[in-house]
Amino acid sequence: MVNENIKKRFMEIVGEDNFFDSPSEMLTYSYDGTPEFQSMPDGVIAPRSTEEIAAVVKICSEQEIPIVPRGSGTNLSAGTCPTSGGIVLLFKHLNQIKEIDEDNLTVTVEPGVITLDMIHAVEAKGLFYPPDPSSMKISTIGGNVSENSGGLRGLKYGVTKDYVLGMTVVVANGDIIHLGGKLTKDVAGYDLKSLFVGAEGTLGIVTEVILKLIPIPETKQTVLAVYDDIQAAADSVSAIISNKIIPATLEFLDQGTIRVVEDFAHVGLPTEASAILLIEQDGPAAVVASDIEKITAVCKENKAVSVQAAATEEEAEGLRTARRSALAALARLRPTTILEDATVPRSMVAPMVKAINDIAEKHQVTICTFGHAGDGNLHPTCLTDARDKEEMERVEKAFADIFQTSIDMGGTITGEHGVGEMKAPYLHLKLGQEGIAAMQAIKTGLDPKNIMNPKKIFGEVKPKEVTS
Image (cartoon, rainbow, N blue to C red; front, side, top):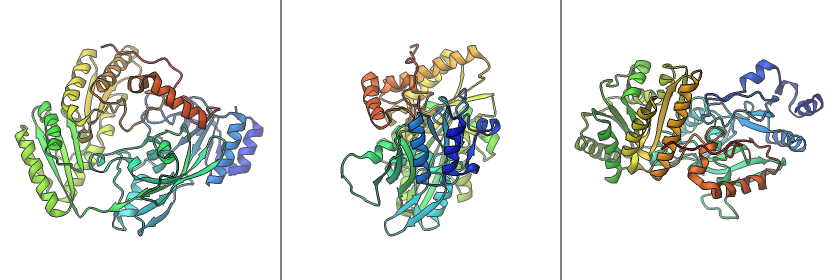
C-alpha cells in the first residue's frame, strides 16, 4: 500500500529518520496491550509538528492509506493495533508541556507527553490534574484523550473528558481545526471538542490539548477496609455513596487479586481476606477527618473485619501502587491475561460482583475482579492461555455473558478502556443498531474514506451473541 514513491513523499515531509519500515521496527508497532490482536503496518511515521501531521494525512487521504495514531501502546481493546495495515503515527517528538498557565488554571500539552510527567509538573506549581489511569507512568495524554481514560480518582473528580478545555485536531482531509480554549463557557456551535474525546482516533488526530487544572487538595488520608465476605465489601461501596460521602478513591480487590498483588508488591495486604476496599479522601483537613470517621463507621456497620488508616504517606502510596499493579501482578500467573471493564451503576456493584463469580463458575474459567468500585467500573480479569482454543471459547462466552449482565443492570460494555476492535462485536448491546447507525453517520461525515483508525468501534464482524 505504501510504495516507494509514497514513501519518498512521506520522507520529504518528516525526514528520512522519522519514517520506519524495516520488519523489526514494524513488528514493534504491530500490537498493543490487547491479547490475540496483531497486524503489521505498512510503515511507521514520527512527525514533529501539527503541520507535518496534516501533510502526512493529506497524502493518506489521497491514497486511501489507513492511519493509526499511537501513544505508548497500553490500549486494552486493540484500539491501536494496525489491523488494516497502513501507517502507524507516533508522537515521540510531540512530547512537550508547552505551558502551565497559573492565571487560568490550565496546562497545554502535546499528545506524546507521559501522563505522570505532566501530573508531577503541575503539582510542582501547587496545582492538580486528577485523572490518574493505572498506566499513567507510561501512557500518554493523547492516548488518555482518545480513550477518555479514567483512574482511581474518577469517583470524585471525573475522567479525562471533564478536564479537556481545548484541542487542535487534524481531520481526515488534512485540515487543521482548533476547538475550545482556556474558557469556562463556550457554546459557539456544536461541542466538537467533546466529540473527539473518546473517539479512539476514528475521527481525527489530536495534536495539542488544553487541560483544566484545580488547586491541589490540602491533605489526604487513606484507609484499608478488610472483609471476609465479598458481598459485604460490595455492600459497603453502595452504603458509603448512599450516605452522601464521595471519596477521592474507592477501590475493590477480591481475594484472588489480593494474593497475587501482595506476592508481587509486598505491602502487607491481608491475603486471608475475601475482599478489601482501598479508600482515600482528600480536601481540607477537618473535612477529610470527618469523612474518614464516617467511612470507617459505615464499613464496620457492613461487616468489615477491620478498617485501618495508613500511618504515613509512604504506607498510603504503597497501597495505591499495589492497586495500580494489579494487572501486572495477575499477568504473571498464566500466558494470557484479559482485562475487561464492565461498568454498572454504583448501586449494582454488589450484584455485579456476584454475577461475575457465577459466570466464571458457569464457564469454568478463572476470573479475578478488582476496579473502581465507587463509580461502578469493575475489571473482571481472566487468566487463561490463548493457545488453548477450547478454553478461549469458554472465555469469550464468559465475557459475552458479563457484558450482557452489565447492560441488563443498566451499565455498559466499557467504562474506560474503549471499544476498539475487541469490543466492536458487542457495541450493539449498549447502543442498538440505531445508535450505531447514528455514530456511523458522524464517522462517514468526518472520514468518508474511512482512513482514520478503520475497524475500530464499528468493526467488520457480526454482533456477538450471549449464552444466557
